Image (tube, rainbow over all chains, first blue to last red; front, top):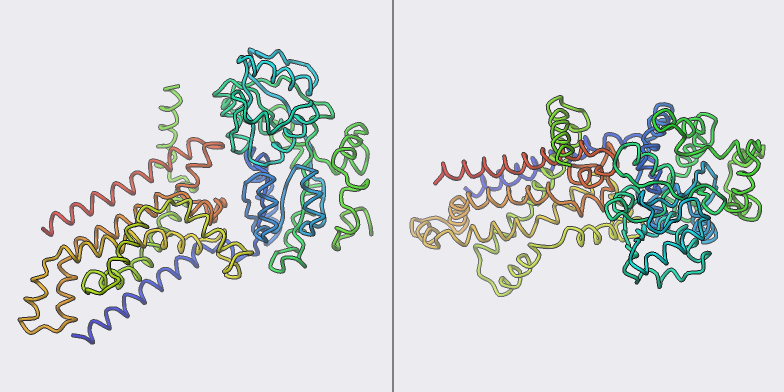
Length: 328
Length: 230
């Protein structure tokens, strides 16, 4: 009796272990290829651009791209903990900190587009076609007398960082604003925040890529009220994680993906993405603009806004790959 | 607005019945992960519950109280704790469980352990103590008598396993924070439902229907089995 019991227990344990191990092996199938974990801003993911790039990249390279869509602030945190191999972000100020603290290396600007202040068609604060900073002042005024509301990302993302710096430029103390009743802290990604703003008939700051997709897909009825202009420039970069700091990161894999992003093929994918469907590109390729000066004004704006010491990545933060920066 | 809902459900049903590869892939992954988690949890919960239910010792109430208290542990709390452990900066970061199905299986197994232990313990305790005594008077050894009790509590064990699986497959916090919803690798029913509403609402609806079907079908079939046994 005792012996049969032991046999049964051993059998049960074996069956469970074998089946769980088999299942795990089966589930991990994709990752038997080399993995690159990319923590990314939500806009690139929500629009579907990354799905597109992933398919083309994985067809050519034996590498699996794993995207974690979290927003710039969290993406940087993931990278600092060593949980990501590469980040795709859009907040130059935070990016510089990420380079100087030693975590980030080999930064490359990959794309740009513009932020826009979007809001309900009725435009209660009458900001249509005003300058961005003036528009914000008007929204505050209307907010305080109860006719307008503002939805903020509130998630430390790149868009949130942009919003904070715009409030500061417009002469407001952002932390004080968050306590006012018309100011709604969404704490969510770009797509979700647009839907909340739409629901509340409120104003918000959005990147044009995500806005266009959501508007054309019929998910929101907000209108673009203030757009373009240097103040609203939005620049996306890729930054690899320093291998000497986190030895286990897949640096080579990450750099292969960066090189793909800035290759002619990669840049073309970015330019073509959504153009037929939405009537204009959701994101514009940045490499040609910067190296060939095809659009001098934009190039000037990008340099002013997203360059550190006149370069997209100062020398001390580069690790190999001189071809990235026009070297031989 | 009502149209949107009806259209969404119709297209979701089309997705399900046409055997859309994404729908199938995510559903299969969910079942495999939660199924594995349930098996592992069963493996370590049964002996613990057997000891708690059959023996009488001093810290028994403390141990039982602990598992009862952990019954309702918020999944996001456990998700956060596991994230901190599995992260490369964390104590077991070298195991590379973060953003990996294996990490999700372990996370869910930990999550449902208290349910498994509490339910099985209760099932064993509710079996009449006389069965054990009777078995012993008929000449059974301590182990044999214990097995007799376990056999009587099979219904309760079945219920514990089902309830655990249902909690595992329906939870969002652990799989989202540990798995990261990586498309084609760690995305499961709940994470896709929660996050695809920003991209593909029909997929969300389709998966929500499937999740509901899995959970209710399982519960109903267990009820039928139990009715037949009693």
